[in-house]
Every structure is written in C-alpha cells, then in structure tokens.
Image (cartoon, rainbow, N blue to C red; front, side, top):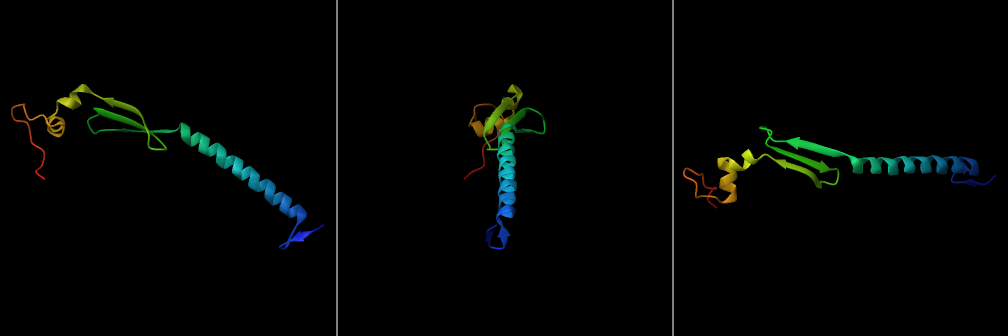
Length: 90
C-alpha cells in the first residue's frame, strides 16, 4: 500500500469517489436551476415578468391599461395628451 501526503491509496480512492459524487450532484443542481423561473408583478398587477436564473426574460405580460397611465405616456414621450406629465429636465 502506497502513501501520498499521509493518505493511503484506499483513502485516496474513497476521497476521489466522494468528490465525483459531489460533482455529479452539483451538475444536477445546475441543470435544475436552468429550469427555474422567478416571477414578479407590479403593485397594481398590470405588469408581470418571469426571469431565469441567468436573468433572461422568459415571460412578460403588460396589461393594456398600464400603457394608458400618465407615467407610461410621459416616459414614452407622448406629450400630445392634455395634461400629460413631462419627464424630468436633464
């Protein structure tokens, strides 16, 4: 039996086997994380978003009413509506 840095060959084999099992678990976890989708919703429920763990948008729902609000028109640059708010001056 050969020893390397205080470990026998058998002990090194056991450690290598345990490390391989842990690596397999990590790979499986990474695959499962790819399937997860985090979801968020605006306070009024008019905008919903789904993101992957890699921050990619996979779901987006915008209620048409969200685009009719004053702030939506303001940020879209629509100043033609009476009483439309203007974006802050730069």
